Length: 319
Image (cartoon, rainbow, N blue to C red; front, top):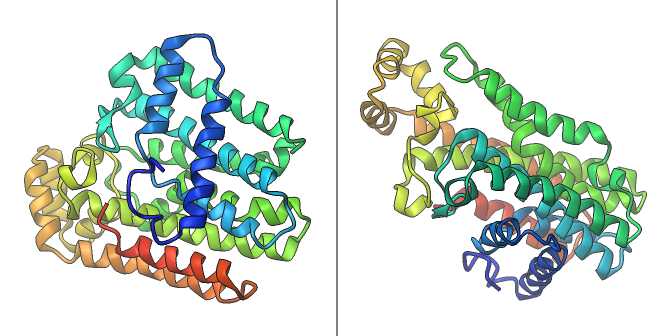
């Protein structure tokens, strides 16, 4: 399997399913425009962790859904995620993701936008083929609205030195948490197990928030080579994540001065020497702990064990 990592080697059955998900995604890109098709395949092949479809498959293991239905849902959720990434990179004018050039950098923003738009269409096609209502994937349109709301909330807070940690959590709950929550809950939801769906949704939300906090932690704790993207890119665009907000709490005058002077190397140095990174890691751990507490209440067995293991590993990852 060409998922960028050895993350799934410990889980061969799940790795095999994710390989099938990748193939299913590619088989549903039937657009005749070769540039757009090539652009979409590029991002599929870039090798993301595929965590969202993995969680979807694991939580669907508590249901009576068929293997084909599980794979279709998993492919749909990953294509939906990929579409949001493509559009994010256009908006952010990002040059690299996962260590490779973004679609907008390689093909131009026009092709990237069309590629992202096409992926949304592919989601509809895949769902209809398996007689799965789109409302089941999205829980309701409010889920996608909250995902967009998180992106817009982050956009509204660009260069806002007065934003709070609560603002940050609210935005990442939509931007990242919502899609993890959907991934965990959609299988039980389709199976009409509302109690399990509600628990899975809360677990997924906490996992998603912890995952984004760790991503933001690694922006300042890891090198560009390790991370696969340029460090300090977010702060240059006015995106102030948890490490920046904790550093502002520790020395607002100094941090404000450095940010206004655009002295980002010194911002980075201060974050490294302050308590900002340890506080960020502790915040991520608190959401991971909340998720694990709820995971312990899931039906016992291998699925629950793997969900808990993966969730713990995400807190300790280095990329």
